[in-house]
Length: 239
Image 1 (spheres, rainbow, N blue to C red):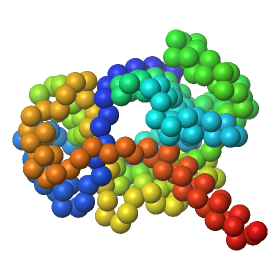
Image 2: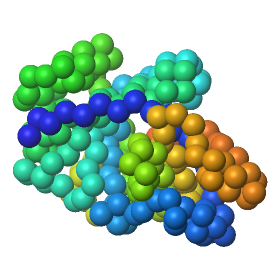
Image 3: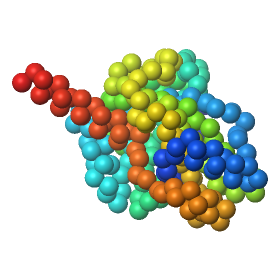
Image 4: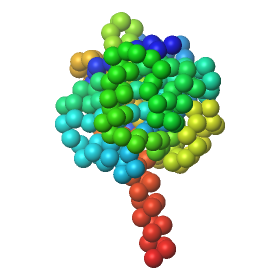
């Protein structure tokens, strides 16, 4: 364990209807293939301050923003691998720093505010982030079903489709069942295009033909907005 990975790319998001998704999948068929994991359920625990400083800053759309989360691609506990991820975005470019640890070790370090049990450059960056913001704790559990496609030409171009995006502000366990409040309308899909450069010409043509336009959609941001709206409504009812 303690594996590291670094990603640098653009991530472009689109909200699709079922019909638009079907047509894009058809257009992708000659160029892309579903990865070996098929349809997976991704679980995330987002960390923030008591005042939600990180996500409030992110929603202001600054030139630079950052998030910290622990992610798993299956129900995880004990020695199962999870990913501690520091995600940064600067002028539309996404930088992801990822460290792989056993679930028990990662959760123990975060639960008791202890250093991560590994020495590496990425671990030091994560520790600096935790110390800088101080008092970080789990604020949102977020899950979704994902299908990920890779390019047959060997490039870094990838497309993911996320559905059944659910959140909850409690039960922060990567080994838990999937449940929570939905963030998308019935039948909607969030498509993310991940690329080191521009879009392939065939994808640009298909998006233009279907009149599918880029959108700004943060899963954690949407969850935070729903949470704040619910808290405001509750305050009004009690006043």
